[in-house]
Image (cartoon, rainbow, N blue to C red; front, top):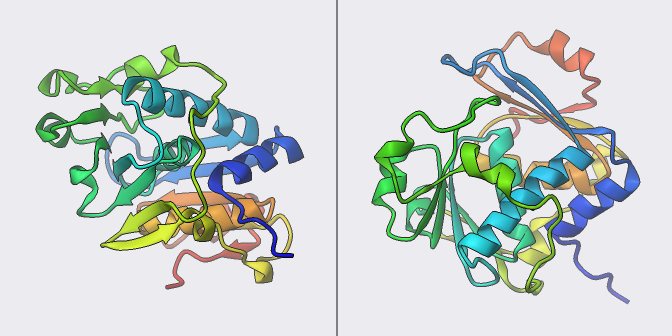
Length: 244
């Protein structure tokens, strides 16, 4: 008997059930700019809370569900991960890359892109402690995530669940079904702590693989090379930042 495919929402639920307090997503930002030096750590419980709020926003405000496309026009960032999980929680299709602005719903840190979008748009502030986007006035029809996300519920119940054959992820015109987006990386071992960096689609796939193995991820941005002491202090067991 073939086991049913593990879906992204299942992965998140299993992490919460397994150990809600263990760190599952650790973020380091070395990108020059106002967020340089940030370190963020989210347990399974806290990650699920962010996902629930974003999923409620998508479902309640944008009527998102199976068949809806959600473009994530963000760098590979801790906020990108919870928005992708939120889109998968409502059963929508995540679109990354050049096609993201053409999705039904756009999640972006660009006021210009949010203003130009013809449908629902969410304007994201990348700094961890942002309370509103400083240029929200340039996209008045967009949801200012930093201001409004906290008003949404901490628990989420989907109006409809995706089928295994529904499209979960679109990258450069290539579709990946819900039944295939969570992959097994048995060679990583049990509960791996995986260092990630790079394009958003690679980070999304590898984060799902690590979490499906009851593991965690350390996500870095900025391309610093002298991070071995950092990875050692974080207990990283596998560094896949530079693998194709």
